[in-house]
Figure 1: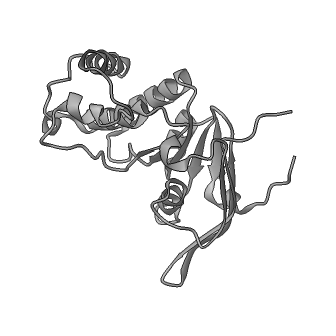
Figure 2: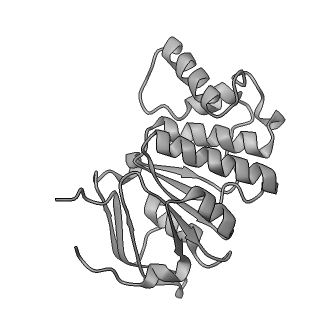
Length: 213
């Protein structure tokens, strides 16, 4: 018997002030799978992610999580990295810890994670000194510290130059695979989708029904 999907979305619908954003949306995300949803700006991709994480409420349809723990089990990476300017890099990352840890463990973990994204020694850096790519990697580390079952990526690399975008996309894919973390990445860029994902799903394909196995 196969393991249950990490996330199943069935017949989801969302509207704002009576105007439909989407209706009858279906998606299944398997364990450790990275899915890229490819669609134009304004089609509803970000709204879908906000419904998944619970920032928006869908009018109808179902969201089923394997662990039944949406709030704790999902990480979210926004289009623009949200970092606190009054905190240095290490302190921004430390906000991702879900449980209390000793100072030594916190320092060791942060140093190890920074090394994993090629930012060794950045602990004391001020966030305003970071490049766009560096800031997104810091935001990614913070999101992943809670060991989410699913990471949602809302076009987080779209503002970066082409070379940096390709590099950080490939690096993020390797990083997710090393940690066996499932992810949904939304983008309007076909190349970025192919670099990131195990499976690329065009936006319109989300409205196809899938049969029970």
